[in-house]
Each structure stands twice: as C-alpha cells, then as structure tokens.
Image (cartoon, rainbow, N blue to C red; front, side, top):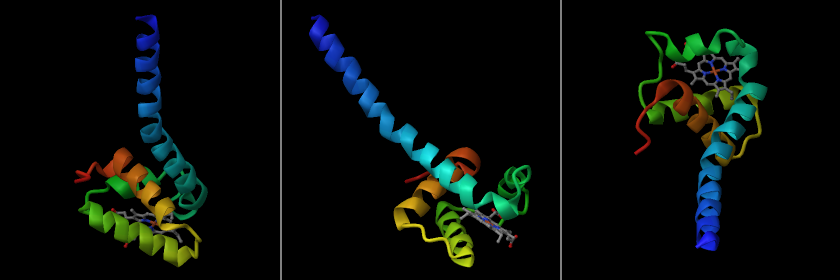
Length: 97
Ligand code: HEC
C-alpha cells in the first residue's frame, strides 16, 4: 500500500517536470537575448500593446524567427519554440492547438 502510494507520487512529480522546465528554459533564453531592444521594463508593453502585430500563434512564431534572424542568434528550432511557448504562456495566451 505504502509502496504504491510512493510510486504514484513519484510519477506525479516526474510528470509535472517537463512542463515547468520548458518555460523556464524559454524564459532564460528570452531574457538573455531578447531584452536588449525590447528593454527590461518595456517588453511586457510591447507584447501587450493594443496595436500589437502578433495576432496568432503562427505569427508569434514568425515574429520570433524574424527577431532572431535580425540578431544572428544561433538558436536551434527547439530553442525558438521554447521561447515562443514562454512568450505565449506569459503574455499572448493563444490556444496551442
Ligand atoms: C534588435 C532589437 C530587437 C531585439 C534584440 C529583439 N527584438 Fe523583438 N522586436 C523589435 C522591434 C523594434 C519590434 C517592434 C516591431 C514593430 O512594431 O514592427 C519587435 C517586436 C517583437 C514581437 C511582436 C510584438 C507585437 O507587436 O505583438 C515579438 C513577439 C518579438 N519582438 C520577439 C522577440 C524575441 C523572442 C526576441 C529574442 C530572440 C527579440 N524579439 C529580440 C526589436 C528587437
């Protein structure tokens, strides 16, 4: 009985980890590379302004690509996706499916 409870909670903990790890990695990448122009205090305004350019998850991906290409940042597509996920989870909240 105790043993199966232990296994159940171990599964629960490992099951939660990937989701948490994903946005924190995205945040780290984003904060390291993206705040220099958007400015630390102001990027929230950029992502939430009324006339923001991005109006779908697809366009968010496109905008992140455009900004990384401008910057010559050597991110893998996975890194870009992590940043998109982080920005979407934090500011835009587009449905992911
Ligand atoms: C060289 C300066 C610069 C850097 C660094 C930069 N951006 Fe941008 N970004 C801009 C500017 C300027 C705009 C506004 C473009 C406009 O209004 O047409 C923008 C707009 C955006 C938008 C759209 C906001 C909206 O209107 O909805 C997103 C999303 C975005 N950037 C993501 C990123 C990400 C992710 C990074 C890091 C890889 C990044 N940016 C790095 C200059 C930069």
